[in-house]
Length: 313
Image 1 (cartoon, one colour):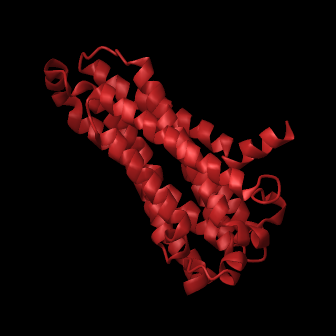
Image 2: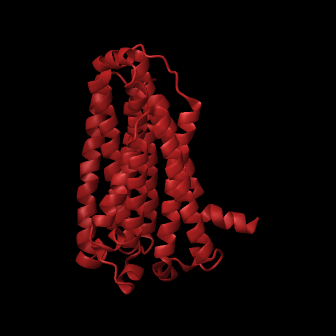
Image 3: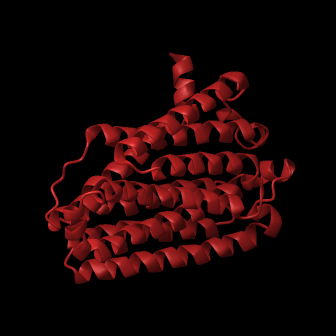
């Protein structure tokens, strides 16, 4: 039982559940209402949707494992109490699990591609896992590159689910023609949430680097706080937060204009949390400020994405 709990911690099962929730939200509450408005029936194939979820979850779990494998030395300095590799799970077992999960992800994506008659899902999954591997092995240790890769992959989740819905419909010429009148609005909504996920993830990754400054410095990682210092990094993060806040406010204006008042009001929670997170970073006397800010940014991401629930209320 204890060994099972260690594996659950290693693959970050809580984050995987959140990813599945986001997949369902985007598919059922973001895209489906536009299809309904276009008169396209919701005839989702349960098998293909399960394959979609399996490829996403297996890829993310594999990414978490390879990340911990590469970060073992740094984690011994930054968070020794949370160390799993070579403490509760051997490196050999972790590598076998990584290969197995990548294989499951690729095979699921291949079956999905065959079912939907589109090679894109298999190719995207291969690229996704390749980026996760290179991120852990090389990009993570480079200035800003690793942060951008993770932010891109986080934002790509929204686009990946949207692509699934489009490719499932594009083979039907009638559905394709019906979709045309709502396509521009659907693209606007999808890209707004994609941009939000990108910026929020980028901010959180930089804050996590600030939190891990000691271990990254001692192991030779060229992260932003190591290269330009905490003060300059904090100012950059504040600039990105201002950009993210501007995006949210712009989206709230559009929601208010379209009388989506529930989503408009709910996003004030996201605004408030983002401002609190920015204030936390300014408190230089608090050694826990980076950890607290990272946790707050995770909640910012969740509340922002969860606002999808309220758009059509």
